[in-house]
Length: 482
Ligand SMILES: [Zn+2]
Image 1 (spheres, protein in one colour):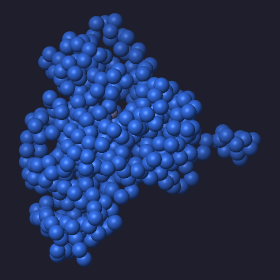
Image 2 (cartoon, protein in one colour):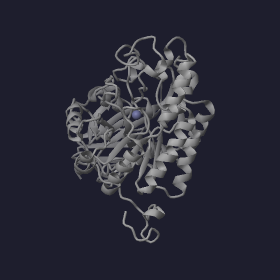
Image 3 (cartoon, helix red, strand yellow):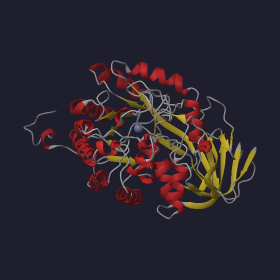
Image 4 (spheres, protein in one colour):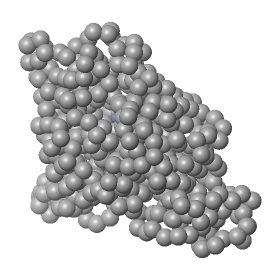
């Protein structure tokens, strides 16, 4: 058999197995997995290394303006390079609709931005304006192009679409085999808390955590699940930050609800005390939902272990610690005006490996599930997320014993800080390839700008009976078809 590349001598890890073996690659695909493969125009020695499906970053804000018009620091070149140095071979950032914009224009805008990517990519569409034209004309067209996930917000005045808007989106998504992602926080609870804090003059960064109560997330998760059940639509809860929210997700999954969820390293690594660092340093830790407390960290790790979460994603939202990012509205500003978000696209997998696998919280197979395979299955990247013959040769080779102290310069992004600075890591990605082509290798960027390709994604296959609300069941609602 002819191979372009053979990766030999390593330990192969998938979401189910750990075994010694070699991988033969031809025309960008894995064509053989076996012991002692000979040949190959190029041979990569993976002795002492772990050979895994490349990471799939399913939650990142790249070249995206916030609803108030603040552009993040990373474009598709820097964002994809940072992702690759962090062990990712593909990613799915957001393409955000602002109110009044057509989805076709949004996609055209992001297609132009994403052409610079060094790794494969798709987009989740953020919908803020579910008009008739969007719902019944533009979204189906996006879906036909292989953009099979939508994200909506239950919070932020400029973004949230109300319960009726969510039902409309969920219903269209369900009809087309798409999945709806939800930022779940109760907007009015947050606004009410903001008002109380402002009247009391409590506006330092640390009050950001107080302004967005755990109850606001728990209530919104419950409500989102109820809305999704009414239309029997699959639902993905992004960045779960509370023990209560994770417990609701766990309960519903066990009950058979078509529900998926993620948490993020920042909720495992930091607490609200980080928002109380000296001066305005706390601004670096302002993200929504906010950081919580040590008990929450322990509970979220337990849910990572026990399978509540589909994935652990970065929610990379790169606002620099300067006037272009965090302080675009001024240096000495009340917390509600600090740009929301934390960077972490390069830190996600080294963090999860070191704190998860090396510290014995999760297995290697769980690491692969949480970092790659589950995202591929949930979001329809049918050729990625595994090492089986026929799959794209999207591969990350890790040195499980390499150590490093996390620093800004290893992130390779356009940021001026990393919240993970100083964290001691064991286990690092050494080589990343996308469709058989090297992207990073032993600390160097090999890929050329634009090497990544758009990946059309498959619709979600809904298995089983799903949920039929009594009032939508013709056998129980006097025969009405609604
Ligand atoms: Zn996000």
